[in-house]
Image (cartoon, rainbow, N blue to C red; front, side, top):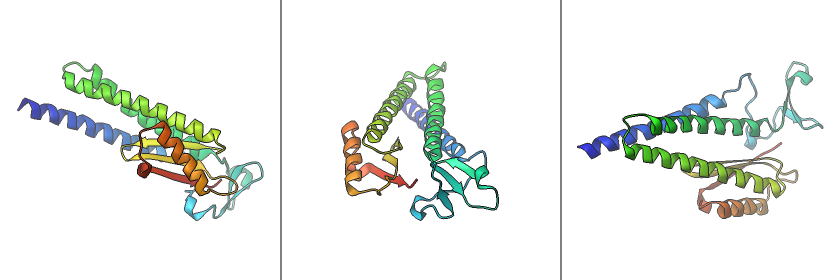
Length: 188
């Protein structure tokens, strides 16, 4: 009976962490002001790219008041990832420091904290290496399903050589299998 209760508590904590990550991610995705949704598969559509590297959104207003930096997507993705990680870290730290919590729960929370730190380091290493290979921007997101790599599409387009280079970096820097790597290129 005692083992069942302990497993139930651990399951509830894991569930809360997952819910916190999801909520943080979904709240972090909501922009403070209304911005157009960018679908890389659809191209730029009504938006155009100015000569100085800003995204101009077509509309009835003065275009100079409607510009956003091209790398806003990457900045927002990093911010969202950091908020989700901070929320999960806060919950796990609370579980470790709370009185009356079993040692097993403390150990599981400590293991998750260490895993989050290791993933953050891997993401940073992968991003830096991909940028060093000539990509303008990159965001790596490790989750339980594998890794998603979002890169700014090169001027001459994404090639199979680019995808192979990114895959090689991810496999070299992590224990993630090729089948679990998703590469998304965002046109800028």
